[in-house]
Length: 209
Image (cartoon, rainbow, N blue to C red; front, top):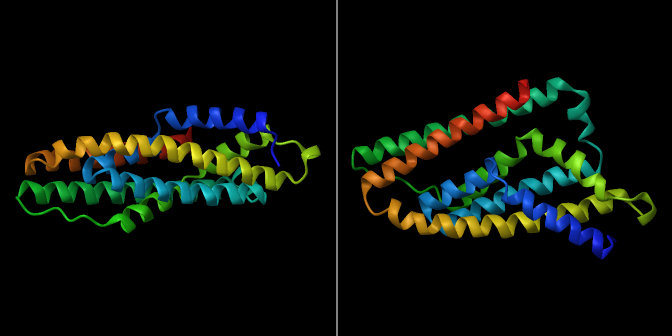
């Protein structure tokens, strides 16, 4: 069990990290701006589910594979970038349909949840970050390190949920404006497409840097 002071210190740090501009918070903002606050929350839950995956593999030590196998790291990065480019294509296609005054199809909250899961799981940088960050707050004398990692992971997920839900509320307010006309919707879909392309580029660049 984590001491209260350690848990509080970690939680405040996690809140600040969640507030920092990054792919996840941009992803939540664009989805909530497109489809409303509930869409942002669904996306957030997907991203947090992905964090469960990263926390678990760090706790059991599987993350070492990514540190010792450049090939495994590169392959997962390419898969993640390819998925982001696929999402960009879907956004551009939705924008084109709006340009022709056709209704843009909402893929549903379940679809947004799945997007969040896949986007998070296919980013090996998250695993490496957890591997470097979480053990700093662990101490072998307190018992199972794996259990401590899981507790820290849960605290990080709570911090991310709080921040991303607030971002979803902000994006939901923007959605009222973006959905006021087909032209606004077309613009937002195309902006989302550009965001996905940028995120894919950032992921690939981080792999080769």
